[in-house]
Image 1: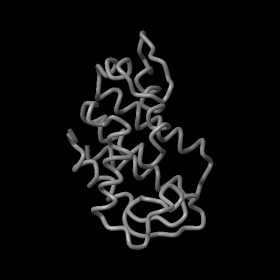
Image 2: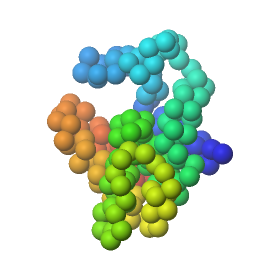
Image 3: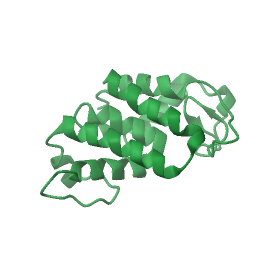
Image 4: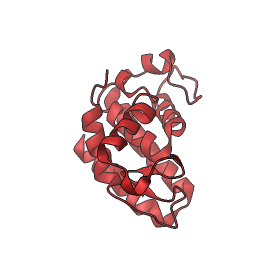
Length: 160
């Protein structure tokens, strides 16, 4: 089941756009947000949107269990998995669940039953998640990308 995947993919394309090869980007050559560093066997310059969609479904949406998450967390989590990596996105989600909660879940970067059962207030968790992403980006200390990352978060919030 892919749930809101098509909507999530459209949102990511708003932020990830076309081809780039920014020397400040550790991913190197990138198109539709798919980097040569992460996918060395892909021909990034000739990557099609359909191929990017296949990669996103298999390696980001499914691996981060977005179909098991309530809206709008599914969209936020997918975008975080794309932008931060699946493991970091999972950790950010778990941290966001634990904020202002009596029964803490283990923050281990794995989305299991405990994490899924703790998703009792999706709107609050979504807001926590977006805030925690901003904090994470600030901690990365990459000022050349910070404004773009924060704009991405704000734009995502407005669209969901």
